[in-house]
Image 1: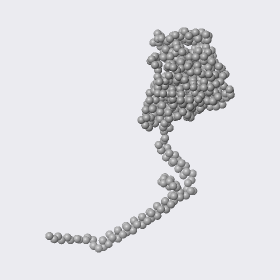
Image 2: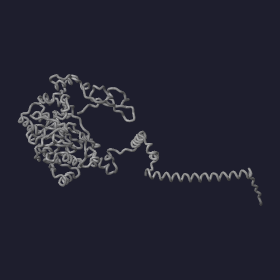
Image 3: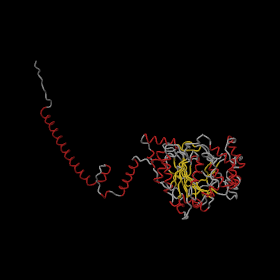
Image 4: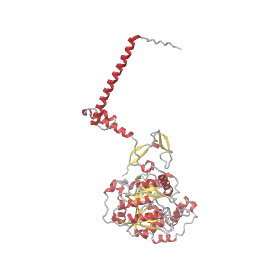
Length: 537
């Protein structure tokens, strides 16, 4: 079967010719463009090779300009541009050592918090030596000390301490102390039962730290009796007791020894700086002194204003009613003469107040040396207690009250009526010691050493504050000022705002009320949201 197909050309020969000419024109045009582009790219590459090997398009625009086109405005603009780009780049974390990168590192961190109550992962990565900020008053650098000072026996007691943290404590003492002043360093292992720490520290010191003597108590004694154990091993002129998780600061030892040389009955302490238990960041502490409340708990409090009237006062010894107890120095012979520690106290707690009362009431004095600073890891909890679960703080406080507080112990029992009939052991030897030393009464202590401690029976808070002020200023030279209205050297003020919000920290109560809770409220310029920076010398 045949099929006839007819093709009809519409438009004729003239339109077909026009189509062919268009195709030829387009081909020629593209060929020319490709040739020109190839030459331009070749020239551009040659110029780039001469001017800069960097392929950055941000820089090419400037590199093709003549040199005289880079005027001052161009340069400044480019600098700002580069600074902006740098700010946009991801920043390196300052505390990358705290980042957990493996299951093993997570185990180290978690086990550290469990056993030691601080971040052992960070502590391990810091190593045994690190730089810390010099937190002393600027005037301390100008202080001069005698060339000949007493020798020091450094006594550090530990129980189940983290090895790296303990060794960094020891190395900081060696690194930042004049060699001739350290007679010996005594590490007292209070019968640790965690891992193999005693043999590890003993082996390390034998090879690397021959000046260190490592001893071990035959059984768990607790901090108090372990310190007595270490003190009996010492032979230096001065005993310097330190905790096992500290780092001493620059020239920390000379102020302590110089003061004891000047007055052998001085018991002296450094300012205790703060080492964060999570990050191990070292930060300065303000100049404060020790006190206590009628529950016989130690507390920090501000130094009376008239003790710090000029710049020089900030580097002079500051009398303190009590001490924290972890870090202090005293002449070794005086420590023994004064009765060392109360060996009837168990494990930990109250020994700092007992020694503080005894020093003041029996002829000595307790002072803070502002030019001596030692950092201490402040933990949120004590990771261990008495082996038998005893409340050693209460037992030891009872011994303090019955030996040293005379009739004022009744105020302790008003706060702690539950403790009145608890056992506290035999105190006959301590009472005999007080008699032999011819110590003064606790009433004398309150009137002459700590007159600002108010009695719980004060009628009104306003009268309490007024009595406190009058006791500190018996001559009436200074006008009474409530704490919230006292004149202070404020240098600036600020608010604390929650990032990415319009909420600021605000005191729940008015500014006259101490101990108010803080909460978040819309930011307003009101007194309850304003905080102040105070001038510190």
